[in-house]
Image (cartoon, rainbow over all chains, first blue to last red; front, side):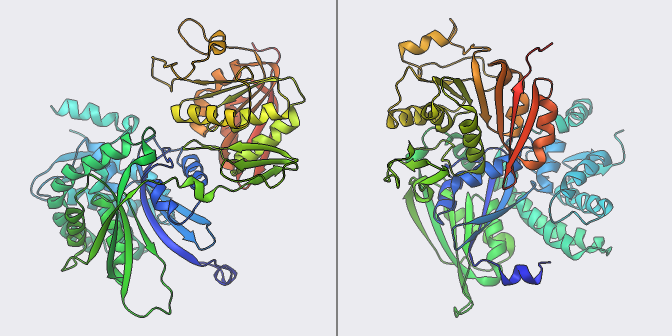
Length: 155
Length: 399
């Protein structure tokens, strides 16, 4: 929660921009260019900042970025890790989820995969205070809705 | 069959490499739902509810997933191929959608899943009357806008498609908007090509970065320029690894270096740097620019290096092999390239030479120090705004 001082000195917001950018691969070209350019934001600064902060991810994983542009042409941004379904599809080697989840199983994974995905997700700003167990449970829920079965170990 | 799948999965974490954005498209919608539900579930155990909710939502989305795979591939090909070659004049579609305020956030996330390159929402003033808000979204030219919008609207449960307009724009040079003359150190100005220098007496470096990195604005560029200013006394030979717009190489010549070399993996950077060298009236004998292959590629294109004087630096195969020739080496790139190329960067420096490393944020400094301490001694860290620059001297006797 913001402190009172932060609320009082908050800069006026011009716009909220959402983008998907590959990690370490931000360039002034589209899609970044036009989206940020129209609010006169410093493109190079964003690209360098974003690339530096996403160095810890494998190159070209699609990261969701939310940029808050302020009226004085400055900006702040938060980077979210790729979605759970993207990780699950990568782990299972699938292109897309099952056509009939619940009835047709597309693939199966072990608890070890779920645990690894949960560890990555916990680094997200929104999930840092959640117990790892509940993150795992919700990943299993997502997997079930995609038609991916989660087993304790491989047979 | 299962053995194959097992071996694939056991290598899962090593193979999180370049992926198609088509896969990400249909899945970011559930990330939104995942995010929303988990906020409400802290400290409670209502997971049965959430799983049910999930399966409802995802049934709808997975039916649409097959459609997204087809039209999202066009986006993935366009977004991965438009860097870095032809971005100057690539057109794009700008779509403005009017919708209710309370669904604006969800609709913009859904649009991102179903093919939009980006969405932006203007912040509304509280004094505005009415429930409507505008989302402006950017699509690439090959997208079917109507299809994407109707799928996005469907996925969040709106009954009808909101009204929208589509306009085609040409990619303008966005850099021009935000590049102003800046005084880095007292008496040194970086001036864009299209503006007049504010102080004609000072040392002015004139730049047109194009699509390359390096406008002089960024804290790392400033830190490197300050380092250069301290180190260059006159007559040195300088190497800029990852030259971008050529700003550091040109600055070195202006500060008095005898010779500068600039290397980069991006052909656009080399062309921009050559252009900037000409703008600053630098003789070609003083500045050498070359493309280096990015890791993994065996072939080396040296069409860019066309001047005969430059051939002396390349061996028969056209590879830059000047080792232990430079008094000052600066690499202002990113953490991972710095770690991978440590041996190469240091090999170009003479023993006792100054090596500068930047483009890293403060929390990445320990890793760089750890990687470079076998080669460098007396490492000093300077910081500006959470960005850091390391400077050290190459060890005289390397084992």
